[in-house]
Image (cartoon, rainbow, N blue to C red; front, side, top):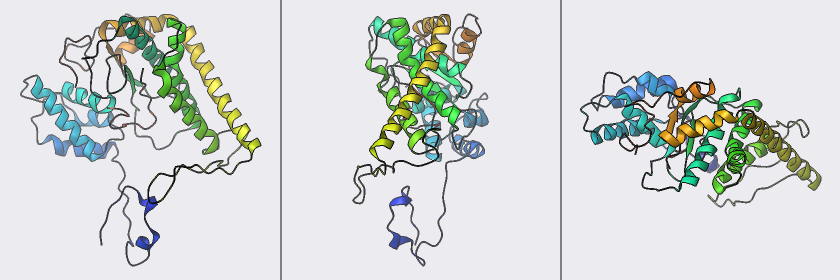
Length: 340
């Protein structure tokens, strides 16, 4: 008998007893070499331009499955067809990757100017904190073009495949998530609902650090809560806890301490680099999308280079709409794509 499942934890033990499923084969997501080989297989079906490199695309798609990579090639071919090109070029793959990771552009939305400014400062806050902290994934692209359900997105891509997260990296991730709200407060003098998802993710990371990963010096290496069950095969959504009220109070205090400390770290970085945030927000308001090279120019005190004519950082609207999230696919679990 042969079977497949993506939920082995809910299989009935009777199915797994000796004589039935004696051999279990785990099929993980492909690594960088596997992604390159999968891309080469799917690229045979479309006419590829001379500038397309499967190894470069593989480095920029961590966490993609084989089906995701097949979809990437199909989306790239569609983008090439929309601009009446005979070959699928690297720019088409870049746009397809943006769509899959960040969501489809919604250029039909007409945002008021004050909301555009707020979104530009929000995303600039995320990008600057991510650029200045030591253990964060490199910022790949920042946009204030609405994508999916987000009004703006800060996209980070890891430099390689990652299989675990250390304590400092998780703390830095929390600080990056707070960068958007802090920039709103400092530069716009207001708070908006755009940071709700950032807060939810930051609180979840802090809670897991304390209750699951033993990363609290006060509470030590111990698990304080079971995982939430799902409504599947009779399971309920209740979360069982094995803590006294005093311990629960300590857990809440530790979560609050981690949140407050990283909020302060992000705020200091933003207040100490106000001119960089201003320059980044100005570039976003002018071009709508900036890439890693332009961010590097701004951080080093240089005027940002204009967007490439046919490159991936299509600003303003001079290029065809790029029609991903942690999105539809989350290419890098732990990367911070932030909804404004």
